[in-house]
Image (cartoon, rainbow, N blue to C red; front, side, top):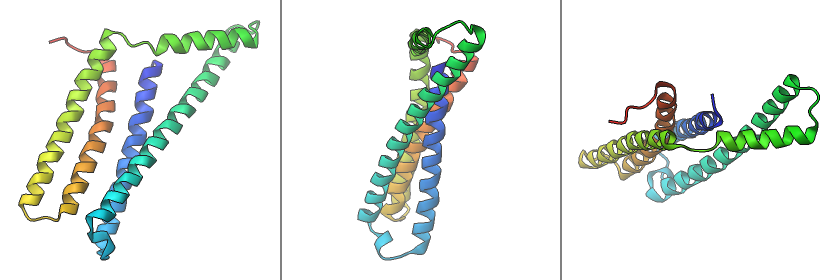
Length: 172
């Protein structure tokens, strides 16, 4: 499994966990029925907070992934050749990470195919949110459907990328 796949797994899992935690939070707050939680301003603020939490969580997760991946590579290189100095190990790790993070045409094709599925999921969520308003549900429900469909669509995009990395892609 290359570094790009590991990064995709980490970001998808973090995104999914943030989405699920927001869903749980939204259900609890909506069922409380307090006057404050029945306003769009309340929900807009909470969604922005969860977006911020998600961005920070993904950045932290990627930083930890880089650290642990570098440590893993260092241990692996040292076991394979104990005569290597720390400087040589550092140079080899740097080169290995650069090589692993290069995107070729196949990686770009996989990203485009996965993005199409993620956008389709978000689009379906958008249509469902409009239907919810037509069925006289609260605009709060609409906003939550939109946020969750975009969040889960993004996580789904990552899992689809993993699927295509493992299975391969047809160019048709």
